[in-house]
Image (tube, rainbow, N blue to C red; front, top):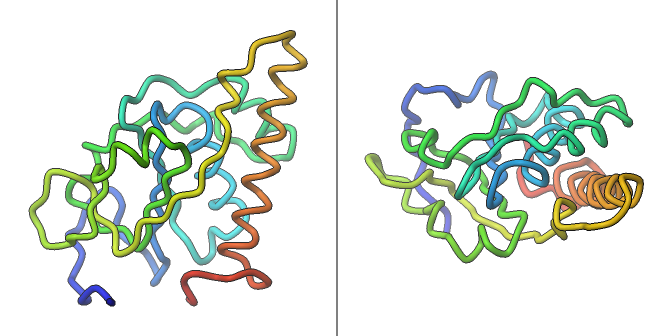
Length: 171
């Protein structure tokens, strides 16, 4: 069932030039959702506005910043955000990237009528990635975990939002 087309309230996540708005959700908004936001913005920023938030936000993990920097994407200016910052925003899609965020839904509701107590999205999907911050070992082993998740996310974003994949939204 398609959601009716509603006028979006002007806010910090206003759509510009017809771009689709995507919100990545994770528990702490410290690693996975931050990397996903940076990847989508870098790869398809001409078509999508990327955002991220957490159920229980903390701080951006410096290992996530480093892993992204290694492939030429700077997320050092991003900050950890709460879902509460997006209450007046209707996203085209919300993506939960960890099981805890999925379980915490309806932190994101498909009921897009304003006002609401959660961010709203026309579609919510789930694609879980392992938590690289949970890896214990040497600094190199920990960075390897971040690189692995980064690369898995990059492939998934390419398949999901790119021209060759099963693009969910056609601009």
